Image 1 (tube, rainbow, N blue to C red):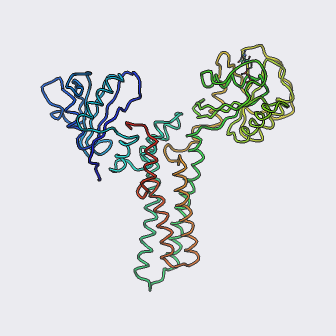
Image 2: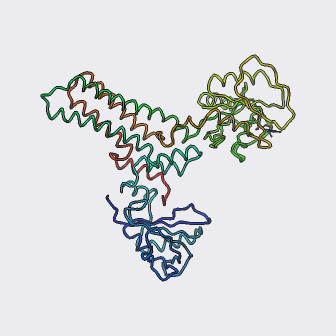
Image 3: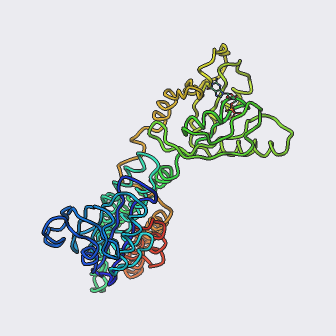
Length: 457
Ligand code: GDP
């Protein structure tokens, strides 16, 4: 374990008044800095209480004056989040108290922690591997239940275990080839060759499965791109606002108001969505609006889900069904009859197979049918076991390098290359897998990962 020799401090709760505000310390002087700024109410000092106990007392400013009545706790290395000595103050969530408290901690010898520095220390001290540390970031920024559950699974080590299993199977293969290198006069018998190829093929399969999870990981992080399309005035902007629960797009009754596309994230029916409101699809000669229409078509082409909106209070037109047909050819589609609160116009008989259809009212915020239909389109088991998916480009790139290296090793084996050529490939696969968990990762890469975290995490 490589402990840092300085002590860091930060406010770990969001800025602004709140019920509770937390000050956090980590490093060799964490407990003594906490002691300097804290006076327990009882007769015992902080360190007379066992680690992890919550001790009630006064937080003192740098002049020794009480600034808040707080709970303080400390943990000792290595049994803490960072692996170092740590201390934490649970204060009232007053920005002024927290600022004064932090000042006092600086006066007691701590320095301001940088973004993600607590988690970085946890990684450097072996408390978390890199995939788990990334999961901390994913958990903090999760925008859907499924995203949060997957991040929690990854934090608990689900992905690290998968990678670890592939890693140790490849180490076994390496060990065998090293043995062959040590005794070059002995040939590898064909049966053994077959076994080795099988072992490599098995790991190639495991890497393929992992890489196949990237698409799901991206959808969880970024949301399923969901295009909301329909003729002008069908109620697209109103539905988008109702889905988001607030007024994001400008709603007017002048056809063609939404000329650009508007994108927002939300969760509906448990599914993370990236909603794309589009300009009304209709033939137009206005060049600005024409651009918007082109964008709408592009949004449909890129969508993972298309909501085709038809105003149920007016007679539907051929154009509506033509659009529906176009959408169904591109992605899973739901036909959404809008303005369900108004008297309904008769639905024309059409000579086409319709997708699942629901009725909504943006006006009275009735989206229940739509929520159910979206959950049916993306059932929970589609996302796979919690935490066992690759969720970012860095992980995808490293896993695909590992897979290519394993493929090359298999080719080398079949082509009868010397064991040392094969070893180079397997070593490369191991090093790429090590990057996933952080065993063999460059410092600039880790710096980049942790700099995306907030200060105090
Ligand atoms: P867009 O052009 O497709 O984006 O349609 P808008 O969302 O701008 O809506 C067009 C008009 O329909 C506006 O006057 C809205 O107030 C109205 N509208 C939209 N949704 C509903 C609804 O659920 N019920 C009622 N009664 N009116 C709605």
